[in-house]
Image: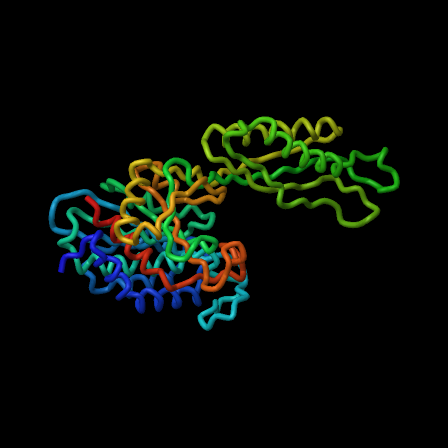
Length: 395
């Protein structure tokens, strides 16, 4: 039968797939893989897509999977993306499907993204009369800092694509609720390294040395002041020094001190200003203390910017498919980062969040994404399946 997005049939069809969605999510969860090479995860996806009539391409440089579903009628190509990779931390939950890989865990919900997208492919493959054109399913490795989307773009995943959509689960949002906004949704994320160079010696004779530690401490203060004094208060940006290392023992002044951290911004100009300002502050603070320094900003993901029209479409689809009580407009962007930003730099589209707060847990008490204690509710993964399908069906 033909399923439309507004009569409840789409969500009901997604719920019928709950056993498949949950089973695949758990299989992937207990067998996490890191980075760009995820052969076991890829094999699970390919097995789940078998028999759906999809044209499947696997990545050359990575273990990505691209699967096309053609309606047989002219129309646009809509890309739906789910990321595949895990994080390098040890899981401390007691769920029966907890990670079986030491030091690896699906602590950002990518296991759920894959499972929801596979179920959406199943649903849509049974209802090709519900859309025109082509739907492209993008299963992407290497989202967690490995720039996996860029590899897939280089290999042609966006060729012929007219619009794109992605979802991300979030534990501190109400279960089953979809949220997004137009414009900046998530921040850019650049990494910096600063080494302050002095001259080491005996800790009892600092006058005979050039101590890099006071210079490093002043650099931390200077960087925080630089943000508050140089960024328009109506915009957002931050610099966090997350790692400082210097010295080996109590009575030795070290020859150098090392600092590293992250730079976040919600627009390209603020990003560029903070990157340049960090280098300037680090160099001149070191000089003021008689030291020198080397500094490097390592480019990360750009700002994730939703196209306004596509963000409005997400809201329309969510209200039609899930109901008004399962849709919210995001009041402000997040300072996390996403490499779906690369997709949105190339084609119109939007990303949305799906709340998966575990049952019986207050939102602010839920273990957040990237926590070793993270758990998600599986009760409304069907909402994600239905939203993927609805965004693919829209013409």
